[in-house]
Amino acid sequence: MLGSLLVLGFVLLSAVRDVYFGHVFQSIGFFKVVLIACTICTVFFLLVAALRGALTVLKDNLGTVLAVNITTAVAWILYFFALTHISPAAANTLYSGVGPIAIVALEAVGWRIVGRGPVRRWEAIFFVGIAVSLVMIGAGAVLGLSGMATADIRYSAAGAVLAVLAGVSLVISILYTRKLHDRGAGSDAILGTRFILIVIVAVAAEGFSDQKIWNFSVTDLAWLGLSGALLIVMPIWVLQLGIARSVPLTANIIRALGPVVVFATQLLDPRIVFSGYTLCALSFYAICVIGANLVRARAALAPA
Image: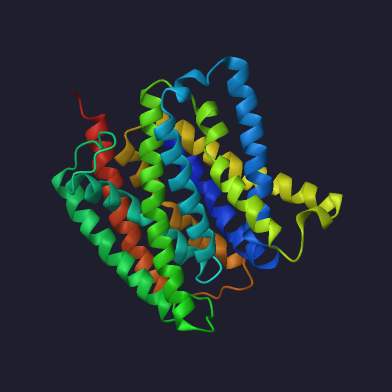
């Protein structure tokens, strides 16, 4: 129950993150925000893990740590670029909704990182519904029906594809972090080493930027650091705690509720107008996700 509540907390925090940073990334730049937020996260949690002597487990699982870094970097870069081309609700739906389907698909093709947990008959039916709703959301984003104007259909199509690929990459990352948890690694040790690669990429990207981050005022840097810590670092920490305390498929089904919250939150963004099409597609998506959650909750509460 605690793991499920933590994942739900991540859903609420990430909804605010997606709407807020969807605008910030266009005006400031993705890598600047990531460089500040992920550096804070890495330094803080590395110090905590080092003081606890919790880094030993990671030394024995360097391959898995590298896999976590690569899949996390790919997921973040693709997703936040998607946010600049399609609406937050569409991006978050494709990104979050593909999670449960990706876990089932990965195991179906023989890629088993950790045990996914059983899939019940009604869950499978709801998963099919989720897949159909994702196609509807993706088509709406490409055709400009998601509430956000697009100048070029090619960019919106790329945004939709990037959001799906980012979601698959994040699922793989989550499975690898759960593998580290199962081998005794703590959340602080994982978060202290999870973003090293993306920090390196952000530093390299900053080197080619016309507007260098060190030319920002102290006030701007402090605000970016605070907002990045609260809306990027904290949700990930909460999710990491939830992953360690729940079955991977359960965590991803709950995480898939995120778009419902994002749709309501994004109406505060001046770039977005209300979309009846997105509301209908998202309502169908929500019914399927909530149905899958109810099936899983009923099974979890059933007497052994």
